[in-house]
Length: 461
Ligand code: GLU
Image (cartoon, rainbow, N blue to C red):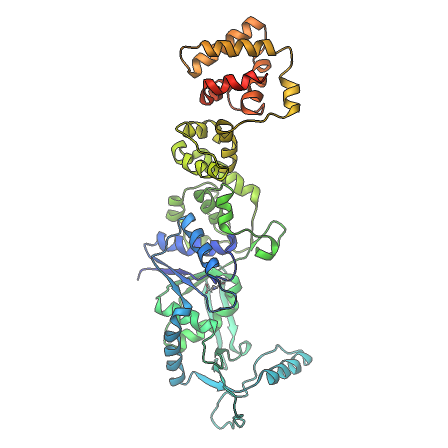
């Protein structure tokens, strides 16, 4: 039987790194096993769901290359199907109407709390042989409750947490349809997982409490539940659960901040899974190596410094032709248009950058004016060095061949004629031409900058 996994986000807020990791693993497992990955949008919380949130989910997944094979399926479009299956459960005697009012439920909870008991529905309306049910109140539409087995345990072998066993006495009879007939969350999830033939449910461990209930519903519908893997939480740098409220960013913001999808996949993969000590790997390697046996058991903590390091490694390894369009996209944000030099610029600067935004900042010096700061000018462009700068400008202007080698020769001639050391000349040139004293080798920088611009910038001296 081939594997079928799913990602089932609720579009109730933007999708952050913790959420998208719950897409990455089922995606990788489907790819690793030659199975199918299904996208399901759980939009039944109509008040809080939005199209905007759906768009960010789709954009984030597309950016990271987490392509789905089926879907997106929207739960709101499957209501008729849920009602059909609900009717089957009713017919098979697995559910019963409950007329307990909200006020009665509140009073019950109050009594249980006072008695230091766990608040739970007490089965008042659950039919049993020989039991006399209360008189049905007039004008009240009942909710439908699921008959949880009264004895025994429900258990599953979680791929992350190991064997989990819950006594059925811990569970009360879950409402699976509201009084207006709309099905509730746990029921819809089970119908979907059955209809979509999901074999492995890989999701956040905030759903562990739902799992015993879902397993009972599976069995009532004569289906065996899938394999479950509940992923530990992702914490932020302060150790709080990653969420919008605690400052998490939408996934797409990392794209805008210049992170590479390959690096994000690499970083997220390591946030709760490992392959020996491997830290840097490609998407292909990840898919080749991924299995459910090496998922981490403890909460993972987001670490932006580490993410930047991973990004820098991928950036370094990326061919300059592939980097150039990404850097052009960042330049476009500043209203700048690059040219054929951009791949070479990327090649020259990529080793000192951790994002494509940093790379674009360097590239900006080639496509817009530079503004050296007063301190750098005062420190490096001293009156003593100005004659040497002028001589350099003249020599550069006279070159018949604008090559790195010829530029290097011109530098050496000036150093000899003026009795200077390389840094005494190279620093002021860097400050004037690139706006900063820290650049890669100065001849290569000047070569890419072009004679005209170099002369104009040296003239300022
Ligand atoms: N919609 C749920 C969520 O966003 C996921 C449900 C599931 O994976 O079963 O947390």
